[in-house]
Length: 281
Ligand code: BJW
Ligand code: ZN
Image (tube, rainbow, N blue to C red; front, side):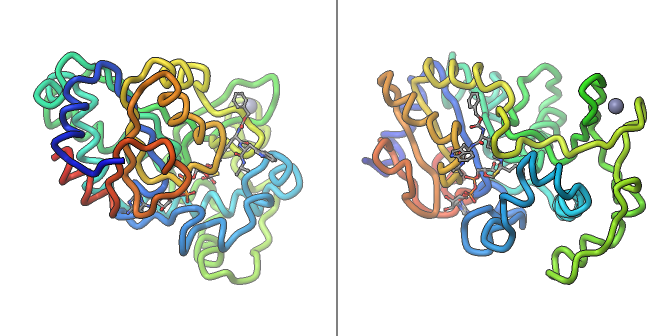
């Protein structure tokens, strides 16, 4: 296990297929809490009653209040240095100087959309239009999906609040006060068929987006850069191991060693908004 920047840069420059797997630690410097760290969402709230299909079936109003709270939080923040260091790597012309002739894919578990926001700003700066977007394997907080089986409605919606009935409930949720009563009929509805909508995120027990493509990318990668994830949630937690199993290298950027320590060839300990800048900037 090495923390040698020069050695890592050599591997980076000779790699042909590079993947980045990112998690909640990437957005910490933007002010978004993690799930399992100190101040993490799943330390304060019960994931089973907020992030599963059965939780939504049981209490749609509570789950929508939680996601409304999260949407409002993200609407008030911006991407940070870590997002802005990774974003240009997606642009082949920019990547050329540090990793010529490579294919690069950013796979994120984050639902905050900040990787995509940073990329879109970067594309504008460099006058680029045709760049592969990050794969948001756990969906997006700002996607809204109809729950009716025979309706395909899905949209990206940045409305604040997403519906009048949820206005102000984010303050109660954040402060841990008694749960406001919100009628099911007042929750976000499908404009096409009138049925209830749900947040477009991947809950426990659901299949992550583009998972077979992600596993293929892992099997082909010669370098996997893992940033700010505890690597406890499957199947994302298996990606580093798959890269390693085919002879690829794994580099970790995290404030602690965590679950990927055994498979890491490189470890850069510390806040990724600093370490990514030092190593890739
Ligand atoms: C820094 C930093 C700084 C801090 N710099 N680092 C038993 C029952 C039911 C299901 C299961 C079960 N056992 C296993 C399962 C499967 C389940 C699972 O893995 N559960 C385990 C938790 C037990 N997984 C699933 O159900 C998944 N689906 C699935 O497996 O489908 C089957 C299938 C697979 C393949 C093919 C076909 C079918 C779905 C998982 C969905 C996860 N959803 C969530 C919520 C999304 C909506 C929402 O936002 O509310 O996604 S859970 C939450 O965890 C969120 C995250 O994306 C995900 C990962 O968390 P992440 O990013 O790692 O965050 P943290 O907080 O854990 O870690 C933060 C890290 O940052 C830490 O390491 C810090 O040290 C670090 N850090 N500051 C760098 N400045
Ligand atoms: Zn519908």
